[in-house]
Image 1 (tube, one colour):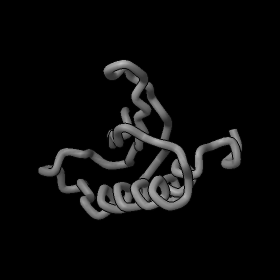
Image 2: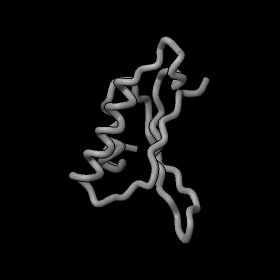
Image 3: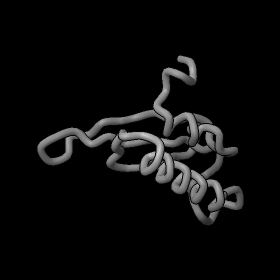
Image 4: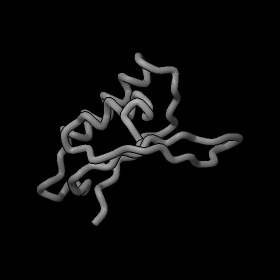
Length: 86
């Protein structure tokens, strides 16, 4: 998959240092499907872990919000940030 095959919000979020990859998940919510943007980060998301990086989390939120409000008509119901497994 090339970057042109990805939604613009994914392209922007994946440029943030500390983000390893992104994808969409869909969940049944009420009468329809909810679109969830999942962002994988390279550090533990436990705030008590010394490698936890609040600045990266804030950059993800502000970037995703800005792109979704200003650069695309796509709607995303939820943003989920997860640590890289294994």
